[in-house]
Length: 202
Image (cartoon, rainbow, N blue to C red):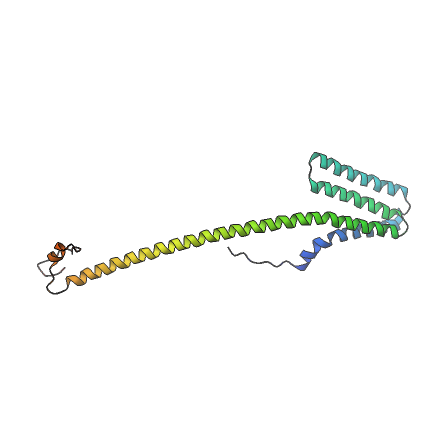
């Protein structure tokens, strides 16, 4: 019933929140490295990134029409946006436009991630609520069964104690002087075991 409480490390809590910013920053850094190594004002590289971005967007649309899986669709469109962002950041010669696109991409990434975080938190709270209700129900059943078994044990003990006391009373009664078992039997009291008249024992 009692589960160990495991405290999550602070990195495990912060990492999912920082993932969108880390992703867009990584794309920006790689695009600027690519820019410094020959991608600046390169029409061929820009055309390649445009084609890849459109391909990822088309894959997202196709996945949405065929499967309807929001995770696959969201991943495809995120890849399309990342490729477009990398193409523009690698093609341009200044930092203002890449930084503007980086801020927009980061804001969009957090907007999309917030939706999944809310859904995950809602499912987690529902699971915790259901688990708590089941634990309370099982604990109630366990308490009732414990009370029932304790009552049965006490009844059995009291019955055994009564039988022992009755047997002791019968033995003590048989040792009393001037004891006449026939008089007791005629009065309706419990009968004693047959007495051995040869040695006077009961």
